[in-house]
Length: 153
Length: 205
Image 1 (tube, one colour):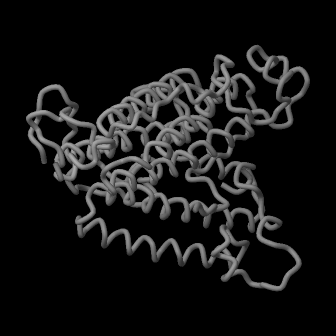
Image 2 (cartoon, rainbow over the protein chains, first blue to last red):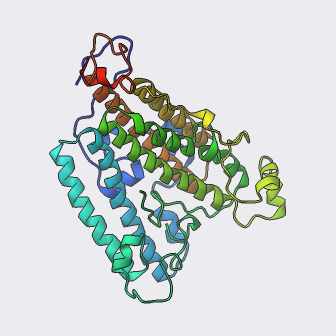
Image 3 (cartoon, rainbow over the protein chains, first blue to last red):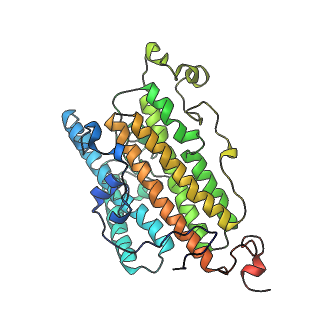
């Protein structure tokens, strides 16, 4: 873009490059390999497990909770790819590869949220449409744990 | 208008309470470089941005920061859940307990309450975007410092995620600044204020 000038900050525009899969992206905090810049004290130096799944295997969870948490993790991964692509497209609005991927992920995310609402509870008000029993006595807040409780990751 | 989804952006599941860690992490809720301050900064600056796409980016990043605030609050909440009276007396958490029991209240690790004095909304696109670049770096440093101090992997994973987001946001604000510069005269970016001297910005004078 613009050449560098005196007396003002410059940051080069990011070029479309290699993309992580959804699981790796959520773990890295970005879908872009070029923007993954970890801190030395954040790597394995403290002997931490690389994957949080390892610790959850040890704790015995009821089957339904496990299924719900697995689905929730997939939703988090797909929706995070969308979050990162949203910001990329805000400054690269004509990048066709990003737009294509965005549409693809959006469809995946919608399908996952629909399935989650059918099996468990609606994640947001638009998901109430997919919820099994529209005439039940409870509205959407009564079902499922609050997101900050940690029971449902 | 905002739409709430009943989930966190990144999972937070902490099984070992630690009020001392909560006392450090709370800084990213209500501290000088915390997520609340970040969100309010961007959502305040967006109204007067001369470029539509920059106002849009500020909206999207400001919204993501709200989700980060929710993650930090979830961490503080889980770290202080079901505490015994003995644990409440842990250095650094006892004073907080007197004022707020184990409820969430935006303050810095140093106990200074949240204040809008921590951020700026200056009404000049170059000034505000330069502030935003600095804000992301300041928040990254706080996450670096937290990662040096905290050893529990259940706490570190979400902190590492949040740190990565600061770097991505820095890149996007840099690109927003480049887009703004493209609309100005590179011989003197400071000839007028693009947010206030609108006629000059749109070349009407």
